[in-house]
Every structure is written in structure tokens, then in C-alpha cells.
Length: 86
Image (cartoon, rainbow, N blue to C red; front, side, top):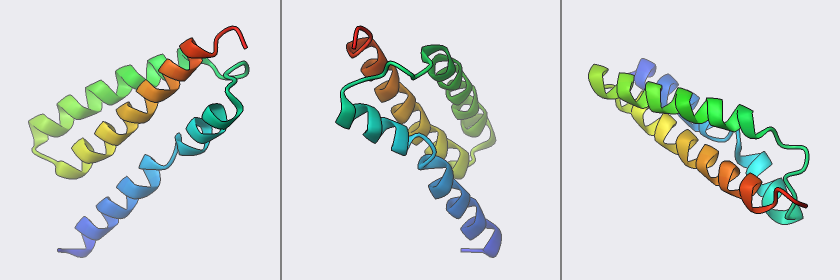
């Protein structure tokens, strides 16, 4: 593995953790009152586009990162809808 690949996978790991604190906080508190649904919908669309780009470029770092991110977005959208009245 080259230094560039190590950097890419490191960036993947850090990026993948971006939404994790919000997911954990929302899940623990069972409240998504102050969470923007639109932000996560836009992020979801963005991740779909990045995954498509990664597939076309055959870039596993981009694909892996954005699959993790789309999973986090999906969880947050689900939690927002589940706790919308709380």
C-alpha cells in the first residue's frame, strides 16, 4: 500500500466518523428536535452521487467512504422521522 493510499483510507475513516456523534446523540436522547432533516436528505443525495462517481472511477476509497456516509445519513433520516414529534 502506498502512502497516497494510506492517506486516502485515513481520510475515509475520519470522514466516515463525521455523522457518528450526531447518530449516537440522537439515538441516546431519543430526540431529533434540533436535527435538520433537509441537511441529511441533501447529504444522502450527495453520497449517492459520490458512490456513482467512485464506481465510474473504480476508486474503492470513495466508494467505501460514501457507503458508510449514506448509511449514517439513512440512520439519521430514520431517527428524525421516528422522533419527529419529540
